[in-house]
Amino acid sequence: MIASWFAFLRIEADLAMTFIDCAKLSTTPQGRTRSLGNAFNALAEIHRGLMNPASRGLSQDEVAFLADRHTQIEAALAELDEGISN
Image 1: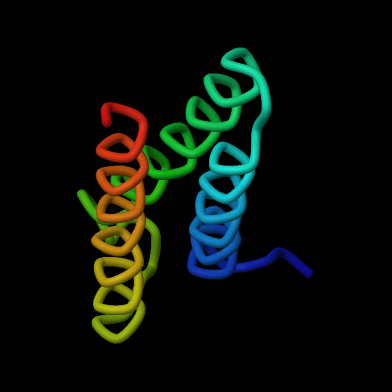
Image 2: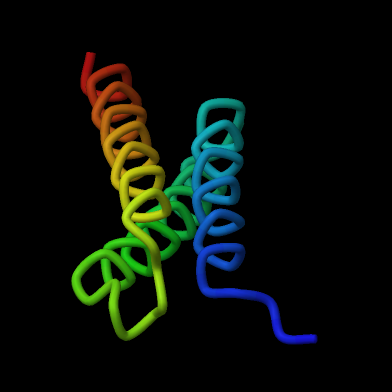
């Protein structure tokens, strides 16, 4: 059975948050950079899904869920960036 796009994008959202957590815990700049890159890649995949939800077969509820997670991920990335800058 083929998993739905929603399931895939939900996993991407979970991965993005996991990579953000890894970046917070990283003890090296290279590890932090790699984790952040992975988080941004996952966020980009979610963004692509939200740009054309009909082609992905996403319902309105799924779009709302993913849009909320997208916002949460962006906020977590901004918070991490602010912490690194200070």
